Length: 410
Image (cartoon, rainbow, N blue to C red):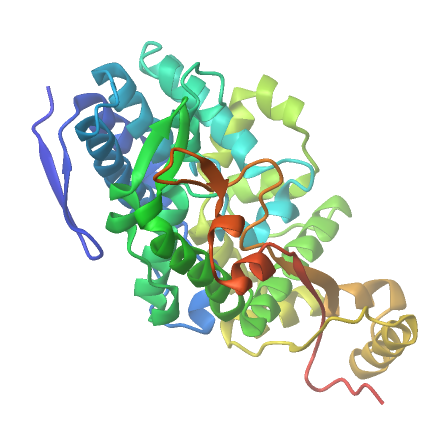
């Protein structure tokens, strides 16, 4: 039996771990790996304090889940002890499938695989390890449990995940506009017909939550300098993948070598436990260690991109609502070839084009419902008297182009 533990969290203060199974899961290497994966990728290139990890976030989310379940119990919502434990485990493990640098490299290692799918596979492995004691947590995570509000607490428009990461990311970046009242929102939660809803008196807290999320996207998650840094990292990993496939030897960890050497499918992860174990051994340290070695590699592009990241010599970036024109792309490619004396086919590693979207509140059948005093349920976009809440409900898309600062566009 484990002793009851208390963890001092910089955001919430003391977090109590009173469940032995929860403690044992936290101690497992798959979960301890999250200590070495930064929550916000390369955002510390912009906000130096953004060094918190997925480990911090998972523990914080578990803490808020406990508060939410306790609050619901005080309102007469029946929650059994096994359900309480399973909900804690589901939110604790919801991000366990993240790879190095979180979202920054998600589509680089496995373009067709979402981290949620990998999280599910890791939870299944943990369930086997702990003699099927995570069965109910798995059901809640994949939304197959009969009481649907448990999954809504884990994943929805107003879930515990978002409540923690907005609070935590705002705290560590110092962006005060992203601060929310998580305690207030949790205290306003209730269950109607197995659905998670917010009592009418909490409407202003939800308005602030949506506003804060929108602002955090533009000021933090989609900050143009972060995009530039992440695109260099993506190009760097793609170059390493290209060189490994071409037979070039690269010095890096065994796990990184394996996962960069080919493109894997979800079926391979499902059927190959050794592959999952290799991925479960991979974190930010593997990537940074490789980058420090690769800056001296004979391949100019690999060396140049590695040096750019280490020295924070980032690409110039332009953001626009207009699409990048074809003649701009051709000009960039030509000037990169001239400036760096590289083949046109290799120029793609030295610039990046794409788009980012801000989806602060896209209901799409998954709304935040307000419980009016009359007993009627209504979507927050209709319940709010702020016109900008309706505006937030629209997807905002911006196109970007990144290129080396010494490459002219003329």
